[in-house]
Image 1 (tube, rainbow, N blue to C red):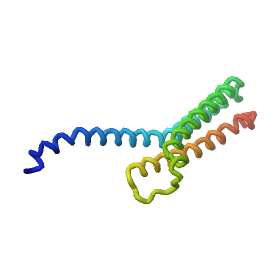
Image 2 (image 1 turned 30 degrees about the horizontal axis):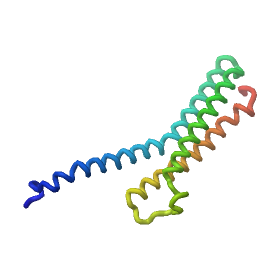
Image 3 (image 1 turned 135 degrees about the horizontal axis):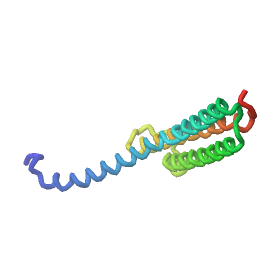
Length: 143
């Protein structure tokens, strides 16, 4: 009997498709998670530097309300990056498995690797937001 007319093969297809869709959805979420923290960092960077540049160009000084608003935006960015990092750490699953490397290269290993990469990017992004925020606290004037 050919594979084309095999009724058993036809019944297995929906289950296979559901499994493939679930795996694809998890990987798509992982790819979004891996880009989330750097995107938050870059948005925060643009917001802070553009707002201060416009304020310095127009008024010659940064008003206190702008500094306060940018500090609030910094806290929000740090909280968002912390949340993304926590989710990525849970996806990495290193505390449950104890495995820092997985040489087999199975689908679950790739999923955990994406969590590991997203976690490391969240750490770098967190540090980046802190460094972007430091001039708001330490530099008083525009020059």
